[in-house]
Structures are given as C-alpha cells and as structure tokens.
Image (cartoon, rainbow, N blue to C red; front, side):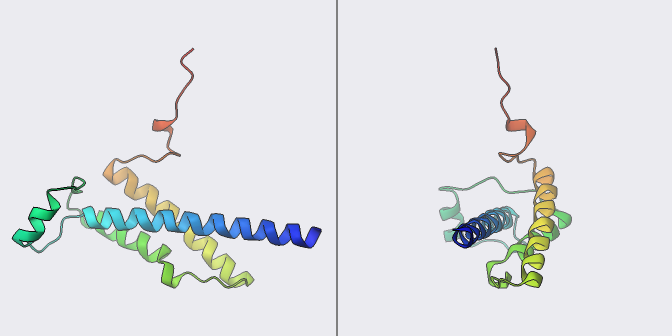
Length: 125
C-alpha cells in the first residue's frame, strides 16, 4: 500500500507543479498580447479588436523584458517531464524564478491575484 500511495502522492504533486506553470504561462501570454506593438495594425484587425479587448499596458521596455522572460521560464515546450533529480530540480527552480517575475509584472501593471492581500476579505462582524 505504501508504494501505491507514494506514486499517487508523486503524481498529485507533479500535477500541481504543472498546473502552476500553465497558469504562469497563460498570464505571460495575456500580458504579452496587451503590450502595444511597435507596428501599426491594419484596419480589419482594429475592427476586430474593438469587440472584446483588455486595456493595453503602458509601453515600457522593462515590462516587455520581464513578460518575455516570464514566458521563457515556463514555456511548455522547454519544460522537462523527466523524473530525474536534475530535471525536477531545474523545473522547481524555473517555477520559483517565474513566480518572482510574475510578481514583478503584477506590480508594474497594477493587477492583483487571488494570493495577494488586496483581495483577501476580512470578517466584517
């Protein structure tokens, strides 16, 4: 029973780690698409964008660099799924660095997450 429980626990932890990496990658993609592009969009693309868009982020070289680095750290094609000590350690290191970059970007754009203290509710009674 111990071996089965250990395998189940390992699968659960691995899933949680990849869930976090996917969450960070999706945030990076959204932020990257909100950064104003240097080229001017065509008329048909502008008409489509007015239907449903998020407000653009300020044009900032540091913001662009941090969003690019965040995505590079959690890009799904570059993350190893090998179950070796070195691969797991590299994965954990990249996730920690990506979480730090995400916090930096969140502060720069003024967004909050469910983990941030701004959204935590205090009892009103």
